[in-house]
Amino acid sequence: MRVLSGIQPSGKLHLGNYFGAMKQHIELQTKHSSAIYFIADYHALTSLQGESLSQHIIDVAMDYLAIGLNPEKAILFKQSDVPAVTELSWILSTITPMGLLERCHSYKDKLAHGFSPNHGLFAYPVLMAADILLYQTDLVPVGKDQKQHIEVTRDIAQKFNQLYGEIFSIPKELIIANLGTVPGTDGQKMSKSYNNTLEIFEEENRLRKKVMRIVTDCKKVDEPKNPETCNLFTLYSLFANEEEKNKMAQRYQKEALSYKEVKEELFEKIRSYFLPFAEKRKEIAREPEYVKKILKDGAEKAINIAEKTMEKVRKVVGISL
Image (cartoon, rainbow, N blue to C red; front, side, top):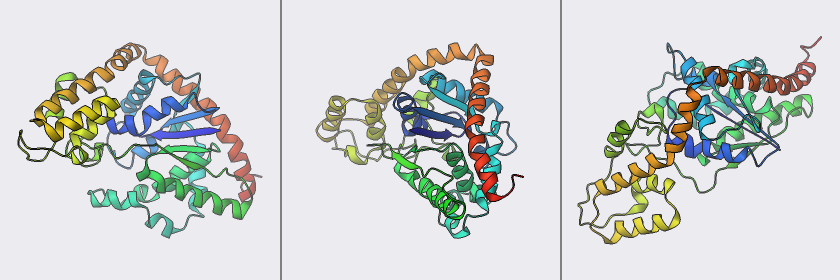
């Protein structure tokens, strides 16, 4: 059973990245026979132009290693180090209906938030399909809001298989249980695009300031508050155990509770949770060549898998002589 996922190196990684993907990736590397994780630098180009990605790529690799990715158990590599992904993306684009892409929520959402309507954003799902199908992936861990990406990939794979025979495995989404949207400091979904993130390795003073700026309602200290609609409580729940969550929920509804108190407790939860990872990251940062070697070794392993798929694809579409 092969599991695969990617993450964009478009800036510092944040709580949404960690709880929405990274934490599960680390857990999955020991649960399946093959785990493949790539740093999606081609995808990042849709939102970062005129900016060097190289340091972002190294930062993402160090972040993964710091939180527990084991290169002996999982393959970690840079997307662009496997040339076959763009080759397959083009081949898949020739059979992908325009209507399928026009219905994609992510494209519409990006336009609604002011992104330029370029071809990269529009064709993003085809490159994503290539990422998944190239490695004959069985499971793709995603949140509920990303399920459509896997549905599009399945549609493309099934159409290709109908035309050329059973070449691609049909992937399934692995929905991350009990995870809703991780809210940002402004209440929207946490995203670098919205500039509302809490970074996982944020410098302590900056983290405190950001936490203190999290948007809340205007209820007074002595008024009951609803934990189910509070961004602070949602974030607190990511770090708290069941007993802690229940006690905090009771304080919301019964005690004279200020949001400042909750923010202080949230800050401490975040700081203490990531402190061991931060110490490990400092050690890794002292060995940049070690990080580059892991990415290089991972790319070699990924290329070996990808070429087996591409030999079949080139043959059936008629470009292999």
